[in-house]
Length: 632
Image 1: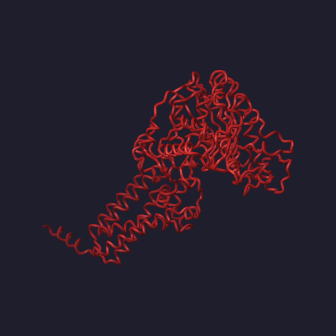
Image 2: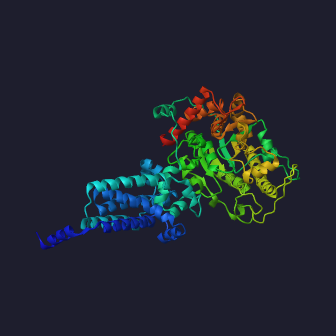
Image 3: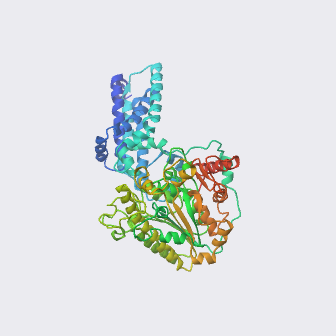
């Protein structure tokens, strides 16, 4: 044996650290792992560390998991630095994957993504990935460094009994931290964020580790009590005989921000034009069905209504915690767009807002709508007022017409569009549109609160513009020779002041929960499904409307609306789930938590056994689709 080799062995066998020094090294290693995980996530490291100065708790929330795991494996294996190498590698690799996902999808890594690794690998093949060599250098450099330390240094031995006790204590600590700190919504929402709606910004500011662990519990999909996967799979694979219209109409969904028929419930005494002139005319024509849809939320939760309408599933059946439905979609999911795609439809999504809000750019891809148009497609002239805050509904209509004409000129395929407006978004105060002057609204019933008058006046300015948009679209479609079916509806009622201020002042029974009917009224914006002249002549719209006995006072849950439009367009048997929804609508047209409206118009909190089984089937089928359904 050479002298050098003998010296190396001799050196290795004599470098034993005491317990105290080993503890110090454990904390230093955990701190190093925490900082490098910060460094690998997007954005400069100094910005993240600077942010933690304002919220010092964040560093500890990111430090505790690697520290406890390092301690756990150290006492389990009696190898400190080898344990540090493994823990560091896992945390750093996950942070690297998170960075890649944000870079290419603008969406942080969350625990539900781990179940979709096959889809992720397939999706990665569609990108030209540029490696972050600095981050990879940190990951593998750290691995080699800790392995070298592990080879050179060893902690003094601890007897098995003490090590076992410490391992058990750390395991309890990990469990307690996970169920406590990392599951606490109060703690999460108590931490200040630059923009709590942008998940990428939130992840970068909170730190990848804390954000990832919090999301283990943030958006649960609760399993129904009697769920059976094989049974639900059989429902989902049921083969039905498809009926397809001879002339396929263009199908357009316009979800108008906070659209509500408030002026139909409270008389306006001022000489302003009727805020709902076009809606009232269109909704009562023989070429339309209309009424109210019951949506998941009041005053917000736009994306939840999108989810309900597009998928036929119900946000309120996902879990009892009131989820943001778009945050539970992590894989390709059946939607109206996918059903119509099978019939040769081209589709596009239009929203004059930020693409990252509600994670729309990713969710709509998973719903089958790759073609998307967002705020960056609009110019300064498209905004209402001089503060450039809200894209006008009129500009949104013009952009739709432009895009619709381009696509129909380029292809003979019929068009499916889902459009979400933004102009009449809260808040409704005098400076909403900057220095723009709008008429002050007076009502036949005097309002005692100045803020109620202000909210109402600002809201009605937006409502008039939304109604004018409906008029522009129906006028445009009626000039076309091609059939068009338009669904126009609100996403939720507007929030017009604390504790339903303006509604109370107007005497509108919104916000009351004393009866099922009053409860549902708070969540019931209006809708109209209208056919242009060509659709009335060349499709079965009017025939199906008569067969289904649909009129101008319909009330249905939002998750039925998509299937209803498919029926009116002449489609059936295309998808067993939407067929089931159409059958269920005829028995329980409204489901909102434990509040129901039955087909005969009665309201109830309880269902008979047959209807309860229908509701259970809906819940189980929805759970299957969210958790197990494979959509190419």
